Every structure is written in C-alpha cells, then in structure tokens.
Length: 117
Length: 109
Image (cartoon, rainbow over all chains, first blue to last red; front, side, top):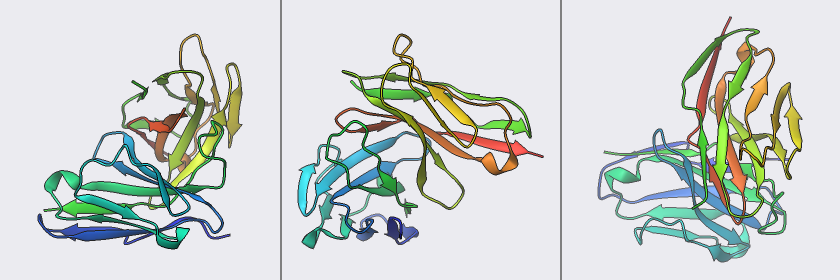
C-alpha cells in the first residue's frame, strides 16, 4: 500500500512569490491534515480536512495560506505571497480513524522543505 | 494551553549505549501519547503509543510508559544501534495533535 506522498520535496522561492504544495493521502483515508515545522521548533497543526470539508483550520497562520481538497482526494496548500517566516517543513498526514478519536494514528508524508529567500 | 516539552538535542551516543529522551506534556483531559521517529529523508513514522495511564508502549526495543502523576512519557532503549539515528518527536493527542520540538539522535559505531 502506498504511503502519504508530498510534492515537491524541496522548494526555494523568493519573498512575494507563490508556492503550491501537494499532498496525496493514503487511498481511502478521509482525514487529511497539514502541519508545519519551523526550524528548530515544534511541529504545529495547521488544518484538518474530512473528505473535502475543512473540519478545523484553527492553526492556519493567516490569510496568505489557502488549503483545498477538491473531490476529497489530494490536497493543496498554497502560500501567496510567501514571506520569509513561512520557511519550514510542511508535513501532510492522513488517517482513516474517526476524527477526534484519541487513539487515532496518523500516517505522515516525508514533508516539503520550503525556503523563502 | 496544551503543549509537549521534550529534551533538546542533539544527542550523540556510542553504539550499545542506553538512551533516554525525556518528554513531559500539558493537556486537558487524558490524551493519548505518542513517539514518532523521522529517519533521514523520510516522513514521520509512528514508533509507539500509549492510550491510558500506566500503559507501556514498545516497539523495536524502544519503550515509554504513560505516567499521569508526572505527566511524562520518556522514551528509553537499552542498547542503541547506528540505525536508530533519527529525529524523535513526542506528541499527545487530545482534540488535535501537539508535538514537541524533536530530539536529534546520532549513534556512532
């Protein structure tokens, strides 16, 4: 079974440009999550999709970030315009457990390393 | 608010040494506790978990016990190998996942 995949693996852009990250969850997983790790800090929750609906987007830093999951399959996370502080590793995860279940196991992708210059 | 605090790294050990990575948490209610590991070039993988107080999670020689009284979930391994070199993340799951900052471990032959 294929795991969670993310594209690209690395992205280097200039401040003010736009970048779109993609995540393909494990087939059949309704739950899809985005997280971000800024250098040296903790991994922080950004948002959670259940199928194509945003269940919780309380972690999105500001309106320069837009996440979509059309059709309930893959998801994209767009940053427009990018700022220096957006640099970090963006992880995607998926699960098939009931949302909010405390024993929920999330399966993570390898992450996209974003560097904004 | 909810948070996870784990031992800062980097940690460098010789092969066969004993490993402890400390982790404490702050949470409302009784969350499940997890250790994830990220090997170079790969995504986070679930290493072990515990869902209630006094539970012990174990996998690949690693162990961690859910201690409610000390709000801790320290990771231990009796004899580390070079292949254990990775970044280890402690996490708890209440209404969402909260992660620590990660501890980088390097095991030298």
